[in-house]
Length: 382
Image 1: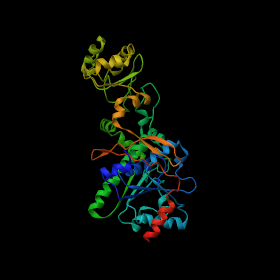
Image 2: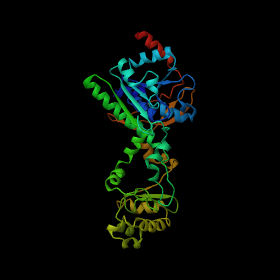
Image 3: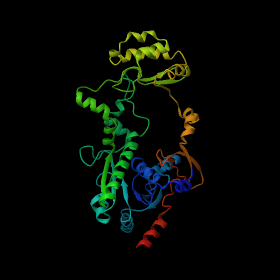
Image 4: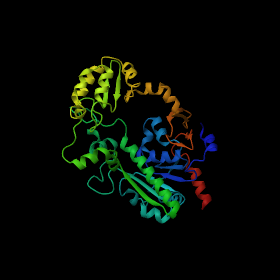
């Protein structure tokens, strides 16, 4: 569904709001992207000499993170450009940045500076490690944060090395946390008329991602809980929880009674384990499962397990996922046309508003593509 026809059917909830996106790479831009998906006008403020550093990455990656935005080039160390940016801030609703702590203050765009310009502004910042502490000036990068926070030691089998997530999870979740804070302050502004400041960091996001497991650890104390040596998937869940090889692929098994599972798949050895041993002897149980399940295909096992109500699923790669009718039913892909005329297939916003799927056919802008138009707007408003 094209964005114009969508707007005729449902007025997007953030329509009429202007967001200034000073951020680069993923965490900040992904937050601005979601606000754009929900109807906000997002102006990406970029350096004239190259813009957002992620412009040099794969074309589809940049468009996936920055589709639907406008681009204004500005040298924030140039007095004239800074004056125009401040004039834009005076009219904006939200400002997002992910500069290291202290840089926005040195540019004259810190919180105290901008709230003197616009008391209604919501000022949103992403950092790697927060404003204080010995890690304050470390590089705020996803893999480094996964490693520092303990996330990389949650995955992989117990006898193997740390395994980071294959996605930039702390970046993306920090962006999602930032959106929550921005929306909360916009709601508060609707009552008080005043803006506010919201800050998130990758490290605090990584800690929050682990809140279940850390809650157990902090209240029990002691050593790091052990990863399962076979099919590890969760530190605190008993067998059979994990992923297992089959004759032609892999299947995932979630929580299930071990004795009943053994009966269903014809593995009588599993009946030897009483329920109170399913965690303590999870590696022994999983090793039996591992050796048994690899004898037949994934389809064979799923045909037995799924009708019986056992929580099981095949492990799909992207070709298998996108070929499945369930993927088509989600209508999860949209087409956008880049400024150079290329047609790109990108994922859409996962939020539905008033029952409507949100799509936007506008790609990411060329660097500075909207500078003249935005400057003329400012001149007309002066």
